[in-house]
Image 1 (cartoon, rainbow, N blue to C red):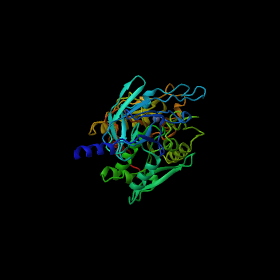
Image 2 (cartoon, rainbow, N blue to C red):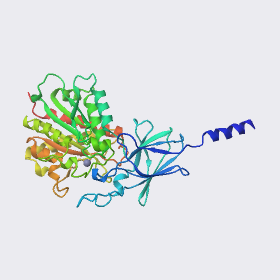
Image 3 (tube, protein in one colour):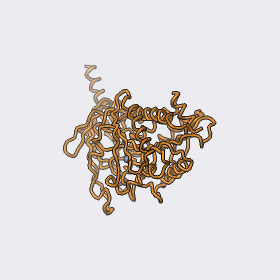
Image 4 (cartoon, rainbow, N blue to C red):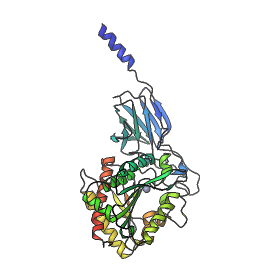
Length: 414
Ligand SMILES: [Zn+2]
């Protein structure tokens, strides 16, 4: 009898508390939330102001979870549009951009994992989760915010003789744009290879920041190859370019009047673009813009990592060097363990890709850099088992190995 009573009591105590959606933190985005307590499910769409880019990014925290219970997410695409004539969002964005095969979740906001594969029914994607704790973060992909970037940069540069936590500029919104500046030893700057790596000109493309993070961690690590780069090159890494849209959970891509990666022009609109262009022009003026990498995410159906470039803007030397870099990066990334799908066939941009194709950063660099400049965009896939922070970091470290091999083949600077 006593046992029955206790059982009853424990059931009463453990009755689930109501689910709650919290989006009051950096990078969060969610809209049109409907919570169904009976089925313990949450219907939602991505948030985001469509004038600030594709509304495909979502990221929020669920409180009130009974540890071990099943929570179901029902995700619908955003119906937000802009009235900008001829603009990208005069019609709602295709929902496929908001619907990765697997959602990403975390119990602590630090360690990110994939959910099981979601199931799509008509215009709704369903993901199920069984959180082990009372609250859980859920997101389109592993989040990487300006605040996280600043802390990561600070932590890795602390006590490192060859690395400095720098600031590219302040954004239109007044936010600092943190960066790694890496240069070790006494070699004068003029005798160093110039390397520029940047991610997140499109705010929703979070995987690209994790590739940058992996590259930076590798570069500041103990390997002989990393040390060789640190002592022979000056390396700049900006893991989040569009800090305002990343911090506010906006998509960034096709933001008005145009996004960061359509802004590399005579009169840049965004502070980050203007500041990056100034630094890149300096390296070019010193004939040492050796490698420029712009990191992005491609479409939902792309099965492999791949490079995007435009040989029509390159002289013969640049063509040969870009091809060589692609070959080395392919060799390194495609042999990583666990397996990372990588293509050795770059895709090309050109006027059919976008009317402002020459204002895309890698193309601008190709056209305005040195005759030997490698200027490439790397596309980071997001519908693959390897689309995790670990998989993305591995790609970053493999890029580092490819870079070392590539630079060793070049004329030394002294
Ligand atoms: Zn992009």
